[in-house]
Image: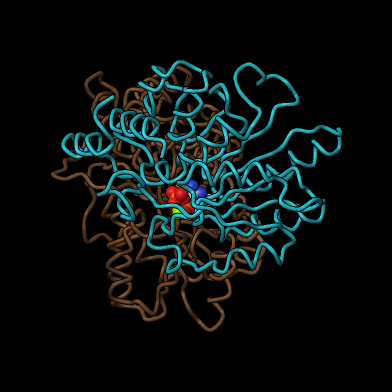
Length: 263
Length: 318
Ligand SMILES: Cc1ncc(C[n+]2csc(CCOP(=O)(O)OP(=O)(O)O)c2C)c(N)n1
Ligand SMILES: [Mg+2]
């Protein structure tokens, strides 16, 4: 578990009095492994055409992305003191005004198409870079995802890896009750993807899974990451209200204590 | 200047929710749909009382509009609800083909319109929706000014046959209209009679216009203020009658200056009665994060901006 990242996510959400807490805590281990182990991207090669690309479809959990980008050295972490504030570039969704962000996202259901387009462009130019995207489980009913899924297998995009942050919750309730999308693996397999399940909080498992990319030559890869919304803070885990809940002073202290003390 | 006061502020989306609750009790044909934002749209009481008449579509807005159009066949009156950008831009073709062109009795009900939703920033802040919706033949476009008016409008559109776009928002704003008002679609509401300048405002900028009217009065300027809650069909008669008296106009809206209320009024003036007009609107830009107050100030949508625009309009009269 990426404890320091979790503390920073909470710190800046608490400061901003805004943000998407639960979904940031559910995806941060995935981002940790992608940025620190799997992907060839950092401030040193961000202007190189050969860098790996990351596009966050579930843009609302931008806090997890910002904290990881800061740690990678894309910008000073202190910039996040202005998160969601008037005139700050660090707004509530990914924007290319922030160094390290590839694509503006926030309206759900856009990331997979964007990633498929990026992966096609790599193939066109015979480039070796890979494309990674992170989807929410709640955003899967957007039809554009399924249109993009078809295109990805049609063009045999084995340089594309999509990760679903399967935390089982969205805004209005459990994903299974709001709009059931299961069985996800069978659906994506039928759409021509190679699918693996992983514990989305087990760093070693995530590393090994991404190290095995592409899962099958000639097919796009799908990682169904089983996660817990609010992971790491007991009272936030699996609780609907922490989708964009902001902790009170006491709750903040309690959370930090659970995570091993204030930063 | 007629006095307007308020004792309470509320979000207009809560007015929508209250209207839906009453509709649920009064009209069996009303059904509601939502795309994973029932809390934001204040639909909980409607869903509780009418679980069979609520359809949770999940995050699939295009699908929701298509479903709504389908539900009209057989006499249902679907209220399709989500945030304003996902209710319009995201699903424009579904609205165009399946709702407007097919003249379906669908009510598209959109919260979080404009920049004042705050922290979420530009991806969620739509400033083009009035323009897109009013360009569709046969679409009625309504942007009420406060909680009471939003509630009344919600109920009125259920009785009206045809596609409607109802726009409301997240910030809390003063409640200054009558709780028992009758909402007349397409009929402008005279807020204050005056003779020096006509201020046409829509949505919560009507309150800003009232504040502006009071500030102008102190400087000896007598402003006429008209609430254009229905942008389409536009009450051309009320607009022309007013400018023929005052000789100049200000339009005020939480929308891009392109395509919204200002342009709607300009078209009427150009064709019938050329008088100077000044716009209070967002100057062709995307939004950003911030509190509603800060954003209103930065994007020039406050009473002060209306005052300045009124003076410019008056100046240009001669
Ligand atoms: C097109 C679109 N519709 C609605 C929303 C509002 N919204 C933001 S987050 C969210 C729920 C997302 O759930 P999920 O994808 O499961 O994300 P997570 O659980 O990881 O936070 C919704 C409905 C949006 N951002 N975009
Ligand atoms: Mg989820």
